Image (cartoon, rainbow, N blue to C red; front, side, top):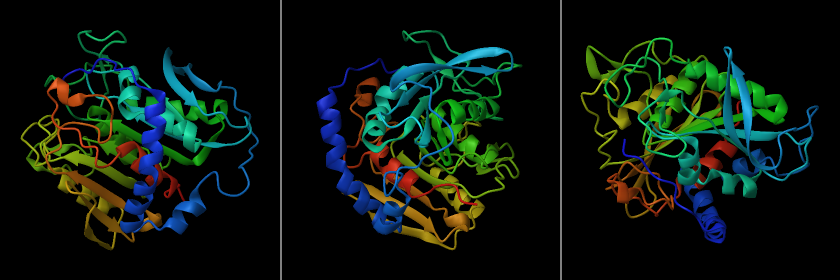
Length: 355
């Protein structure tokens, strides 16, 4: 994957953009079957503030938090909004793409600005598989279970188990960050989206919902038939709500699939597989969201889960709504008809873990 150097942002423009898309996000989710009443009833800020037995010790703002895992210590970027330290908050893991890092991912998603406005914590960890360094904070990849890296090689023997590591990140932040256990979510871009998908497959007891961008999977491709997921490689015991965004002109993780064992089957197959795993009874329902964006939604699933795919006609290997000019790095068109970060937060709010 081509690299993206950090691009400075204007805070005022960020906030203005977030406000501008708020109404659009609510209308879009409502049209996809997530009612405005349901969204409001699930918002952490509605009604009395949630007080808990824990006390948050991570400072307000952006800092690094050390995670001890299997004899090593890993620094994780964490952003905390300015709220009372005894109020439990949702947690969103934001996972960078392959050959990239946490700093760049924070710029691409801009979830930290949204976290300040909506009161949730963002943790942006770093993969542990090193690529040749071209970025100041290094170039890294995730150990996505059972599939090769973008280089075509498999992760080295002894590579960190990133499903276990990211679950440990949640566990450590649970107390130090005073996390609402029912509201733990994951997103990611490209390889980070594939990693977020793996978390839903293998840690459904932790993650209530995921929202991969340009990277949804539902298990590794079957080596005997790359057009389908391999049976048994994604078998979550609990339903997980899934929201995803993908451009039809993505050349890195192609929308219609390819013959690469890292990717394989189509994005539509991935979404439909999740609908099957969640035993959704209705869908796909097609909704025209904007001139270039169509949403496919599966509803009436187990545990009040939903599955929604935003298909971006002509969209590249990009994050919808980002201010980072990914198109300048050969990754294709960035749509601004929708904002992935705002839409995913509305989706997360409406889908806490139940039971």
